[in-house]
Image (cartoon, rainbow, N blue to C red; front, top):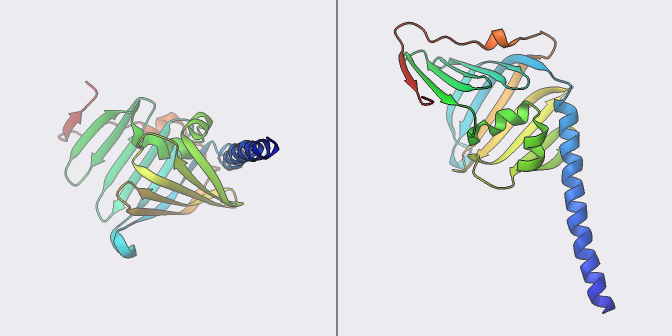
Length: 206
């Protein structure tokens, strides 16, 4: 009986310590994300295939305004603009002159943006968080299919420096950020998008 109690106590202790460690890591990640109300800068992105082969490279600029506004503008090798507001996810392909609009609500692929936006509810309910180092965190989905296996976020001097995503196909996406500013104020007006005249429109929320 004593042996069973010891094993049971140990098992419960492991569960408790695991949950506490996850909450502690989540709290630490939120301490990095919470003070940032808006952010903007430049990025370079690399997509790796098997054997760390680089499949694609892109670069451009980004803007973020909590809680729900994001802009991701790819400037090379082609030109594309992705904007998220509280209702819609816009994608403008400048080379093809096509605009797509989809509803934000219920879209699993929005999870990485919600993480960067510091959505505490999303972080606590949907991800296990591991603190790799004082400024580096790895997130794994608890359930569902957000389109990736893990998401690693790294900071330098309270500014986001790097994101690495391992997707469901075992491809790795690495994004490095440069010239990041958290001091220049942004408003919702900075994320208004109007489709250019003559572009082909594809709306999937009507």
